[in-house]
Length: 319
Image 1 (tube, rainbow, N blue to C red):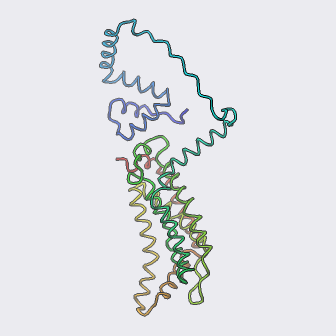
Image 2 (cartoon, rainbow, N blue to C red):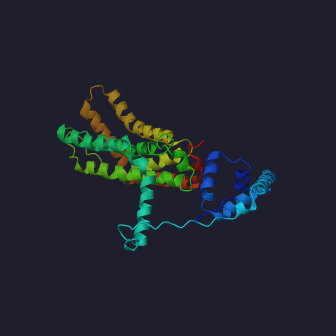
Image 3 (cartoon, rainbow, N blue to C red):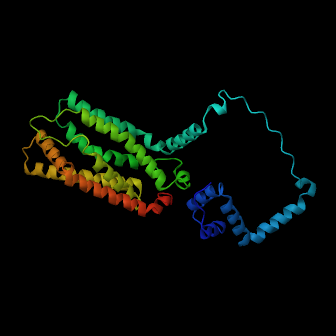
């Protein structure tokens, strides 16, 4: 059963050949499981300009084929099904449904969990721990908190689009494609990056006496969510890679520009001075209720924009 039916205008454009190819793929996928829309498409084809040609071809075929040949042949007997190793009754129907749904979710989220991105997340987390404990550096926590919000942003860019998925055109134009598929893969990105980076932040030692205390390990979660939603919202106007580059680059510029400007004003500043300025800048962006409420408001606005423009994601990067 399907939850929607094609509009009459969509069916008419499909039958006369004026419907764009990605939309035609999506409608054909729908017609495979919807008898009502398939019957309407067949009626529209017969009533259109191709109707007389179809009728003429049908009559010609029926005149050529002998009437005896039109009698349907009896269906061959079905082979005996093989004995299953586990009786079907032993597997509850609900368990089979859950297994099938889980398989579809894993397939949909596949590109978000493949490739070099997952390895890059592990490298960031393990590198921060190695820098703190192996190298004895106080800059591990500020650097991790600076990079953590843009890690999911990069994951979105590498998990959705024609460059990330060889079957992207087919998946995006199916009824389950578009914004739903994009959100599924974004959720997979967050499910991998959030626990790893948060755990790495919790395991890092506290800053030394020479540096101000950086924000807590969980302070980046709401900013990271807001930047991820901003990437999704901007992708509806451009594409995922461009949206990720703009949002990620904007965050890094807003974070490092004040630090580098202050370092230029004080050429004698050392590495610890740069790290201290970075920690203070992160505290300005992450610490306190006003900052976190600002990130929450930004995330809510981006979510509303996603909902308002959800139709734009049906043809994202398909043309």
